[in-house]
Length: 290
Ligand SMILES: Cc1cc2nc3c(=O)[nH]c(=O)nc-3n(C[C@H](O)[C@H](O)[C@H](O)COP(=O)(O)O)c2cc1C
Image (cartoon, rainbow, N blue to C red; front, top):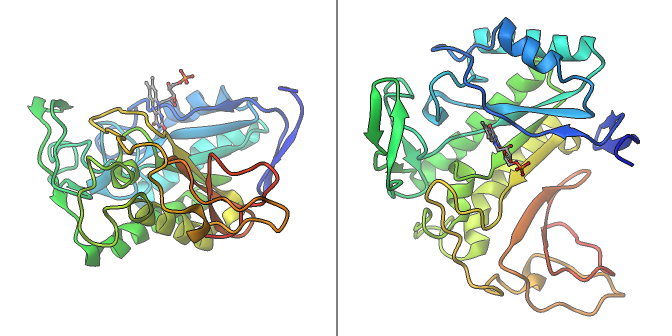
């Protein structure tokens, strides 16, 4: 089974071994992947699919010194050499697009302000080029500026395609910006992007939809890590606290009508649109669009 082919959206993968995204921090101050990065991925091209290390879509979204970006012409050109090397070996590679949100420091972002869903800092220290420092209190993104953050992620995703990637994976896990919107302790907003689990999922779903529209949903994935309390995230929603499933999920006529869902909501991309399903969905039912 592991070594049998699989269709993943638009691409065929020859085996089911997928390399998880692994940050290596080898792209220097300018965030440009060089020959060492190309060789790293080229060596792994026999895997069914590679998902790249997290790459920042905007300088404010950089979480680590040496992390690569998908913003500048030089970064795109650097990634083109990486994807060419992987493709020359017969491999496939997706870019992981990762806005770090509050997991950063202005010493890392080149002075760019640290932003997040809410002004809640991580309790602890961050390793910067100038030594360890306390995590800063991020500035809360205003409702009006959320579309521009989504646009940055869309542009970086387009840049990934220009750089030769076969698709993108949006990083909505492990405590970074998208995950910060999902979690109740990092998202204490009072607008329509905060409060209920449905509201907290809104920014993530809008982002996936926007990138899916720009690239075609068949080459867009998303990584989530429900209840993974890392980097100060605390997903404390009690079970069964999600809104009634019927508000965003239409059961098929054959199913028994569900009235509630687990608090674990899983945004995912289907062939042409973003769907929202729940881990408690009856197996006889077909999720419909959100
Ligand atoms: C050094 C290192 C770098 C990582 N970088 C990323 C990353 O850029 N993006 C991401 O989604 N996960 C990243 N992860 C998480 C891994 O993809 C993976 O989920 C984690 O190591 C757990 O793997 P396991 O379930 O096989 O134990 C990283 C993990 C490690 C150890």
